[in-house]
View (cartoon, rainbow, N blue to C red):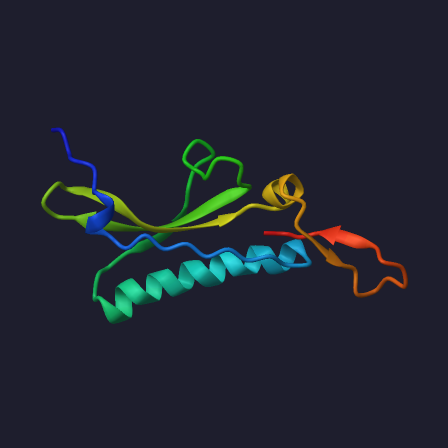
Amino acid sequence: HPQPFLRTREFLWQEGHTAFATQEEAHQEVYDILDLYHGVYKELLAIPTVKGRKTEKEKFAGGDFTTTVEGYVSATGRDIQRATSHHLRQNFSKIFNIQFKNPNSTTNEKLITQQ
């Protein structure tokens, strides 16, 4: 059964980008945002969803891993991706040279951010 692709005007396209000093902070942010998305669907919209993690083939290209909130579509009997959150490590910050001054350094040492 062919299923039409959802057009951009039919859903909210939202992105947020953050940068952190440590991988642990960036990793925690991914799961904090996943919980936020899940809460919006559950508490605000009353839409049941399941939190999960995408496979290596499904994850965001260039990312370390991708988490997802999936929801059931009764008309098709399938689920649909409702929201994702990506852990990028330093993959993009290295390419785009996103740096910050090391607060523990007496020199002007710069470090690459974690995303």
